[in-house]
Amino acid sequence: MLVDATLLIQDIQLLCFTVVFGVLALQRWEDRPRRWLWFTFLANSAGAILDLLGARLPLWIWHGIDPEMIPLSYALLNLALVRFEGRGRKSVWASWAILLVTLPFFLAWCGNPSQVRTNALGDGAIALECAISAVILFRGRERATRAPRLLTGGFMAAFVPVELARFAVAFLLNGDPDTYSQGLEVTSAVSYIVNVSLLPLAFVWMMNARLEAELVLQAIIDPLTEVLNRRGLEQALEREIAQYRRYGNELTVAILDLDHFKQLNDAYGHVAGDTVLTAVAGMLRRRLRATDVVGRFGGEEFVLILPHTDAAQSGPILKSLCESIREHPFLFLKTTVRATASFGATTTEGRSSIAALELLHEADKALYRAKGSGRDRVCFFDAGDVAAER
Image (tube, rainbow, N blue to C red; front, side, top):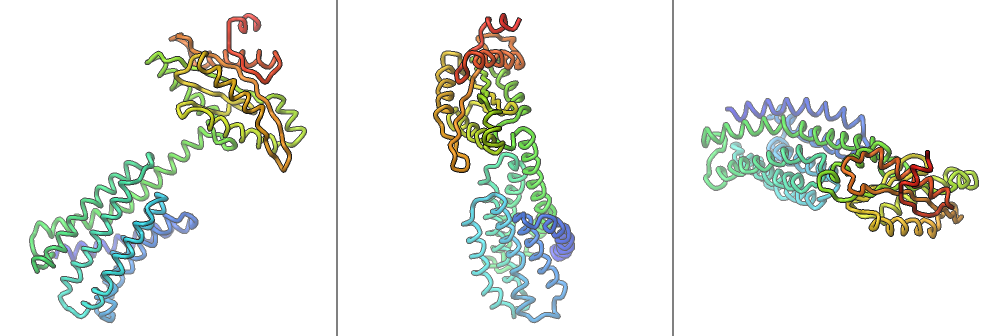
C-alpha cells in the first residue's frame, strides 16, 4: 500500500538524518538543542530498526514499544524546541504525559494482529505532540528565526488534522485509515514525506538564522561594554539622520570623553579602566531613553545619539549624566575609583543637508572646548569653535 511504501522511505530518510545530526551534535555537544534534536532522530531510527526486525521480536516490543517510538521522537523534538526557544517548559511535561497515557494501551493491544487501533492511537498521540510543537513555534519572539518558525509551525498545525482524521476513522468509524479512502491515503503519504524532509531542514534553518543574527550583532557591538561599536554607531547615525531629513525632528549628537583616563589606568591598572568603561556604558544605557543610541567610539570615548531632541531638551539630560558620572563610586577590588567626563554636543538645528561626519566633527570641537575649559562639563558647538580651529 502507498502508506506502507511511504513509511519504508521515511525510515530510510530517518536513518540518514540520524547520521547527519549525530555528527552535528558531536561537533558541539554543549549545544543542547542540537543534542536533543539528535535524540529525536535516534528515537525515530530505533522505531525504524524495530520495524525492519518485525516478527523476530517479541510482540510486546514489536507491537507495544515500537508504536511509541514516533510519538517519543516528537516529544524529544518539543524538548529540543523548548531548549532552542529558552521558554515553554510546561509543554515538555504535556509531551511526556501523552507518552505515559498511550503506552499502557500499546502494550495491552500488542496481541491484536490487525493493529489498526494501535496505529491510530499513535496517530492521535502524534497529532497532540505536533499541536504542542506548533504552539511552541508560534509563541517564539525571536525576529531572526521568525520565518523558519512560522513555516515549520504552519506545517505542524496542518499535519494535526491529517493525523486526527486517521484517528477518527479507526475509533469513530471503525475503519482502517490506510484503506478508508484514497484521499486520506494520499494525503497521509504526502504529509509523511514532507514531514521527514521539512522538519530537519527547518531546524537547521532556524539554527543558521540565529547564528547569522549573532554574527551580525557581534560585528556592531563592542565586546567590552556591550554597546554599539564604531561601525554600529555610524549605521545608527545614518539611520537617524535619514529620519531627521524625512520628518524634521531635531537630533542631538554628543561625544563623551572620560577625563584623565590614562592616569586612571596608570594608577589602578587597565582592568580598573575596563571596569569604569563598563560601568559608564551601563549607566548610559539605564539613564537614556529606549530610542536613544549609545556607542563606544574608541578608547574612552562614547557617542550619544538623542533623536527628537534639540539643545534645550538635551542640555539638561547631558548635564545630569555628567553629574552622575562625577558622583558615582566605581568599585574595583574594594577600592573606590572616581572619574569625571567631558561632553561635547551639537544639534541638527533644521539643517536639512547636514551629514553624519559633520555632526561628529562639530561634537568633537565642542568636546575640545569642554576639555580646554576645565573638563567635567557639557559644551555645545557654536561658530566660535570653528573660528578657534582656524
